[in-house]
Length: 318
Image (cartoon, rainbow, N blue to C red; front, side, top):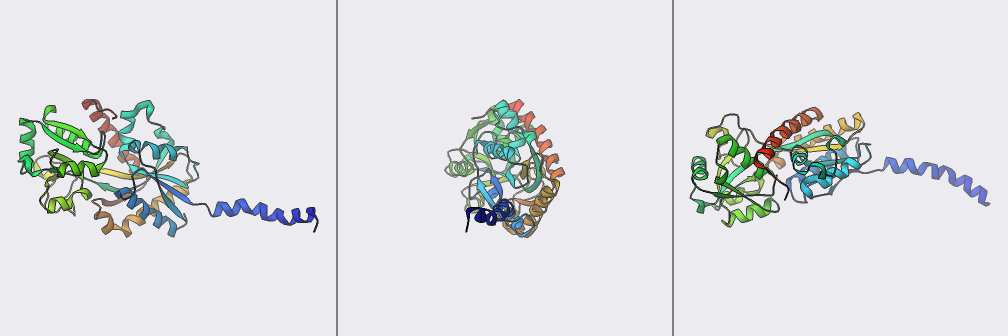
């Protein structure tokens, strides 16, 4: 066979190769939390739902670090073909721009909302050695002495929740002293050990310690009691009607995504929430889904709220 003959026979195969690769491309969800975290688990549920529908094979890749900025920046730079999303906590977009400013690493407007994949409250916990028996006792202690409270880092949900509580109940600044740790697990470890007295902790991180009596649960930040902690009242029940502090797990993609792809992702997210409700609630997360418009509205409200908190407290990146 001549070289020319071989080239002619190979030409159709070479022309078909790009199309074949395009059809077999894998979708990616860049998860801003490490493996084992609730967001990682829920992201994989969404990936499974996506794989069963028109979106096709989807993988979850860990991009943890910098309070979600690393994952968000990579997603913002991705091709806007609807094959790359980022899963993150809303704080990455609602608080981080206030903290990082020009050092954020990406422009928030280069990302567009796709879906909400769960809302979660936090629970106010104290160590028994603190002598605090209930929520009223916590408020009294914060007004009479200085309490050390743990969080997963500056700007984390636990930090923000305590500052929101301080503002709502007019607690003195010296009454609550923030001790920042690297992640929720370390914050819980230090609280269980009694080296700090209190902390607002994601509910999935503390039930066993509450059941064992090693920590005392005082109040939940959401609008309703948590399924994992049905005996623990909400802050709203305990003297502040309307207090509703929950954080959202959200999916975003690069600006310019095809509308049909964004709709398919929103559908996959809704299906994942509906199909996995018991598993999601076992993580301490409310299995609530929302589309792009509702997600954008939630983040906008949180952006205004946490901007005010950051300015009032002088919150800084650590």
